[in-house]
Length: 303
Ligand SMILES: NC(=O)CC[C@H](N)C(=O)O
Image (tube, rainbow, N blue to C red; front, side):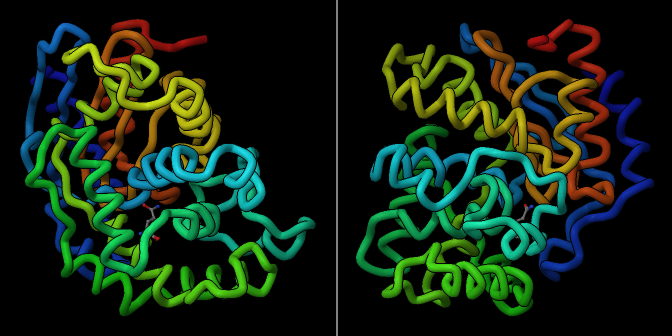
């Protein structure tokens, strides 16, 4: 592991932390950490694996699962599609071009905002806590919280997400009674949930076993919904680099703009990675290299 980490760390020079959320720009550019959690509970960690970072888009996998569990498949797929876009994660393009104006999938920003509108709760805090409790439950850590500075920083500069959300309201993807600003607050809060590599690996291991936690032998998530989530991770989880990632790494994964990646080796491992410097498509530049090196050496591709 140390060799892989040191081989991959220099790739961070070719990228930089996300700057469109000012608070994320402060992240240490050269950080790189990884945790691999195996089915028998054995762990391999290296580098900055204990560093805390915000989940950002990785949280979208869990809001999708929670929305499916609370509303069922039919209600969720009335609001989002099942296809990759080939566009940037925050693009508006297809919302206007392709009828009926529902976001293409739940892992792009527009789709995730639509999914967040399905999270039950009476107000912003109630919904935020519901998502937070779900993450705590799966990651097995009651101390997980969300970073208010990051959430506020995003709220202050979220011109693009605000446009997407109002566009969705105009397209009737959001119900008439939806308060867009409140919905966005819930979305920014869940993106700002703070974890480390071990937490991501713990949650990924549950996905790797179809919702069964192999460490406690309890079925925590419905198998069908985990199947849906992993399929989206494979086809859309690395934004518009998902095709290349499927060829080079070949496992379901989800990245976030804070530099996290959660990856699943079906039946075997849960993996968490942090590397804040991003490539132009918004994925951790050193993190992707690290996953590629590990996947090639261990023959993880599912194909
Ligand atoms: N790709 C991401 O991680 C995006 C999440 C971020 N909170 C945003 O909405 O822009």
